[in-house]
Image (cartoon, rainbow, N blue to C red; front, side, top):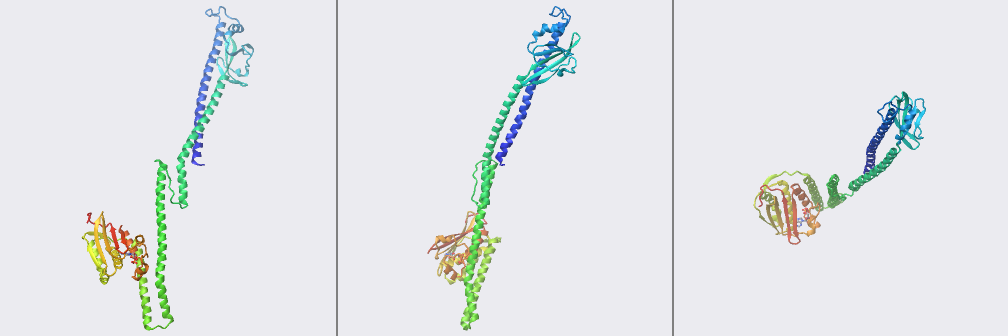
Length: 472
Ligand code: ADP
């Protein structure tokens, strides 16, 4: 049973129960009051009858009756016209009816065992007629006499039945109406919950794009907002997981591809050495080839290890200066740059920085190496550095071959090379910038590239490495 039906049935039951209870109590009270009023009137009537009979029968000159009566029948005969409204009967104790004003049916057994002067009464029913029956045992002329009256109560009972009928109809109508209003409200209230249920189902079956639209500020609104932000985070995480899985797949593919070529060549040369008697000169060439390719594979394995280690590394941040960092890196690159006659122009104001200097030097070496390779013989490299908006930046510009704009977004991926054959011939495996990117990430920084084919490339390193809050 859903919530709307529960509210509908519960409301219906509650309203019916409450109204019925109230109605039964009210109707009973009203009826009882009317009944008691009738009883009081009837008692007065019966007392009047008795009083008048006593008065007429009394030998008393103060009464309006000039002479006293000698028999009850006589007294009744004089008085009977006064007692018009009721059905009454007067009889003696032996059961002899002294008078009855109409043909109303009185039951004799009701008056058995009456106590003197005590009025007894009750409700009687005769076919569809209700009446109040009242009797009293009294004494007239020293004789026991029973006075009985019947008062018609059919009208009162009919009114009670009518009131009950109207009340019942009202209760049912009010109950159904309020149940419908409540059920309508419940449907309105549960509509967004149904939307949420549908949305949760969709998320369960893998549709993380599902969102719930609900603008209210109530609990359902809070739930909808929380659901949406949960779905958003889930979608982002799943997307990230997918991308990571895809990257890992590509990485594994690239790695396999990367090691297959040298391995094939190495196996080829080893096979040749094993099968044929080679000239000493050829043998030396083959062995050297195997050694150099072996070293290349070893270097590749080291770079891969570094890639993994850097990704999860906790940087050992120390305070250094931008000059020290650059000098260290340029010192290491000097033989390469000298060999290619590359000129390096450095215009840097010295200032303190925070960084893992070992890792950051690694980044600078990679960038300078790439710049040197791109610039070639007689190339130029310009280095600038400064602080801006709380960040340290170092830019390294070369006047080399540059690269097309669409390549820039991919060069930080592992094994990605713009010019594959050239890069490989220069000993690159396309891992350098991937490693640099990881190092910049753990410094909360990034590498920005600007490049134009034939003109050169500028790489800017930016990270939160500021020591003095002052732009330089
Ligand atoms: P590699 O070790 O092969 O150089 P990197 O990850 O360092 O790999 O660089 C990826 C690719 O990006 C390089 O193969 C090269 O094609 C391109 N690249 C990087 N720096 C520059 C640069 N300064 N000028 C032109 N191309 C560059």
